[in-house]
Every structure is written in structure tokens, then in C-alpha cells.
Length: 509
Ligand code: ATP
Image 1 (cartoon, helix red, strand yellow):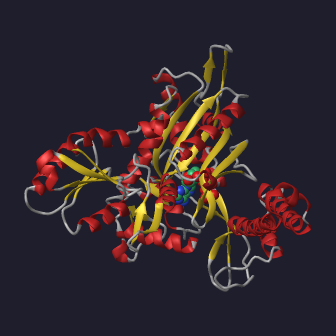
Image 2 (cartoon, protein in one colour):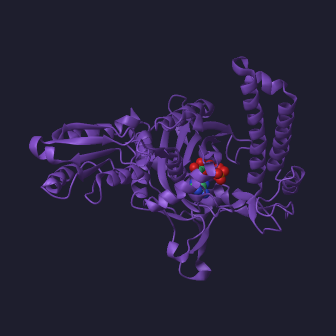
Image 3 (cartoon, protein in one colour):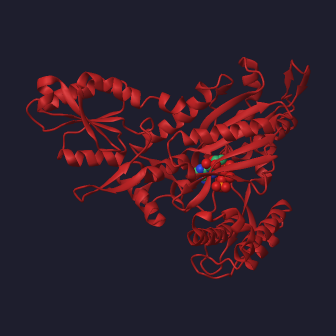
């Protein structure tokens, strides 16, 4: 069912101009995608929602837009040159390459699924009196599964921390993990693979410097910390937000726009007093999950997942996971990055990156809490929960994208009932008066039913139909996407109503 859903979403994305494979006429480029005419509108709205909720809604957050190219030392300081690696492993029979950590995580997820099934079965058997917690802690089979998970997790954590690649391979072998393609356990050794793309800057090869395409936007914020501090009136605690492209040479990239080699991040670094970082970490966990919930997507599709091993720069880290059609996966990361980055940049640049705290009467390197989310993963989360196939009363099927009206690519479509009798002129006049404020579509081709279907498939929340009665009394019908209900209303009231229903207020208040 989920597999079908995922396939349907991929083909719907292409058919309706949301997402195209990059350079498709040349058969595409691995894990690189383009947004089409409707996709780009949704992307812009997602970015605007994030930007407004950070920069516009917080007096103590400002935005910047830093360059993709940065001084090579930035990536030395940040640790990316030495430690931005994924452990990879190849299956000798299928010649397919995998991320070793992902193979282990997926194996654990399968065992978790077995536990879930046992619990569901028992819940059915015992009925209302069933206590799931009690069952989990006493049922021998469930306990055995859980012990297996705990054991793998403990070994895996230690192996990651001590960078023992042979132990990671051993965990894969001991867990009897097979290649999904060949079904064999014929694995190579595990190797580390750096994910940064590099290129050359400068015209003469001898003087050129290797520079990197940034693998995260965060470093552009850290190197501008002093600039913002000195030119704004911000005092700690305050944040710097940025939206921009990032590049990673991902090893395994087979999940549509979930994992791309070129993608956009929306990141915010929040600078705080040392010792207060956990308070702010909790604050941002709460604030960010609420941002997601405002979209009206089923809350059960989100969960927090604490990191087993925190990255080299963090002292606490959690993911907000979303239930994509292929299972729960990371949508956003919230990290307590300590003073790691600023300290490193201070050391390598020789510039003092400190803050004088007048209340404490002392200088220090601030601690940082980061929130980091990918635009395309948000896009996929929204699209996969919005996509619905419905059977109508007359037996026909419709595909509808139930996207939050404020994020919908187009807000309203203006449809003259027929292409004659002065209806197109009347409809065009309304279209022209709306388009300054709202992304509006005008469509007079095909039957009205077909045109409704088309707008449903694009996620347009409102359709306005102009008919013969409109010429007499200046009214129209408004059709609501989700309920398909239609009402008659004065044409003069359309503009205000749609502005109100699609305003940022709906998401930001
Ligand atoms: P994963 O474990 O899935 O590789 P990550 O932990 O490396 O992700 P972060 O470095 O925390 O990811 O990046 C922050 C956010 O950027 C992620 O939560 C995700 O939304 C987004 N992101 C990271 N890598 C990609 C990618 N290759 N394609 C699309 N979005 C990405």
C-alpha cells in the first residue's frame, strides 16, 4: 500500500508539474531533481512559512544569505574535511553500495515492526483491559526482540564512537543482514567516504585552491556571527537564520527527493549563554514540532528520535522523524552544538569570536542550539500526506492534494461555466482583480467537472465558477476543494474571503 502510494506520488509529481528528474532528456542525473511550475510555488511557500516563523515572528532572530563558496579553512575548522564521512559497504554479488549505518538501522526497524505486530495482536485478543506497557515488559517473545535491539544498539554505538569499521561489518554479519537485491551476505569491508563535493578556484592550476560546495548552510552563519553582532542590536540570546543550497555526495540516493545530492536547507543557529543550552534545546524542540503540527497533518506521523551517537560537534541531538511512505525517517534535526564551531573558527582564523555579556560582566564564546530542516523533505512530507484518492458518489475517482490553503501553489481558479455568452469576459475581470494579491488560475477548457478535477490534483483550495446567473446578479459559486461543497456568493466578496482563508495568519497565529 505504501509502496503504491510512493509510486503514485512520484508519477503525480511529474504529471502535474511539481517535480522533474534533472536533465531528463539525457536520462536524468542521480539524485538530482528540478521543481516544475507548481512545485516551485509550493517550495517558495514552504520557505516563506519557515522564514516568517523564524525571522518575522521573533524579534531576536535575523536572517542572512551567505555564499555557497567559502574559504577552505572553514571546512577544516568545522571538522568536515576530517570527519564528514559515511561508512559504506558493498555487496559483492549485486555490486550495490549501501550505508552501513542505514543497513543496521533498517534491520532494527524490522525488529521493532515485529514487536509492534505482537502488541497489536495481543491488544485485539485482550480487548479493553489490555495494558501495552505491561505486555511489552513481560511477554517473553517481545522481551527477546527488545533484548536483540538493545544489544545491536549498544554494539553499534560503541563501534561508531570508537570508529571501529571492522566491528560495524561484524554487526552486519552477526545480524545476518542480506542485500535486498542479491539476497546474499557477501559483503566487502566497511570504508569511510567523505561526502563533500570539491572544485578548483582560480584560473591557473598551480595557484588554485581546492574549495568545497558547502555541505550545510550553518557555517555561513558562524563565520558571520561577529558581523551580525556588530551591526544589529541583538544581544544574547539571539538567532541567525538562513535558507540555501547544500551539496552532499550521498552514497545511497534512491529515495526520490528525500535524499538528493543538491538540496536546500533551512537552518537557524541560536546563540545562548553557556550552561543555558539545554533550556533552549527543549524550547526549540517544542517550537519546531508545533510548526509542523500547524500544517494540519496527522500528529501521529511525527515522532522525536534521540541520536544514538551525537555528531562531533554536539552534546545533545534529536531528530523530528516523519512517517514517509517508506517509513519513519528524519525530517528535521535539532542539535545542541556547544561552542564547538565558534571556538574552532576562533582558533583557525585567529579572530576573537566572543560576546561580552553585560549582565555577567564577562566575555565568553556563546553556545549554540541549531534547528535544521530540508526543504525537499518538508515538500515530500506535505505531498505524501496531502495526496488522496477518493471515490465519488457517482463512482468516479478523484485525486486531490489536501495541502494547507496557505501553502497551496495556487489559491483559486476562475472558471467560466461555458466559453460564450460573455461569461469568459466576466470571469477574466475577476481573474484580473485577484491576480495582484493571489496566485490565481484561469481555465475555460473542457467540462467543468474535468476542470475541478484538474484543480483538485494541483491542490487549489477554491474554484470560482461564473455562470449565466452571474451576469444577472453578480454572484458566483465557490467550490471548496476538500468537501467539494459549493455555495453561491457575491463576486465582490470573493477577494476578501480567499485572502483571509489563505493568509499567513492561518499558520503563524
Ligand atoms: P540523514 O541521516 O538522513 O543523512 P543527516 O542527519 O545527515 O540526514 P543533517 O546533517 O542533520 O542530516 O541535515 C539537516 C537536514 O537537512 C535533515 O534533517 C534533512 O531534512 C536535510 N537533508 C540532509 N541531507 C539531505 C539530502 N541529501 N537531501 C535532502 N535533504 C537533506
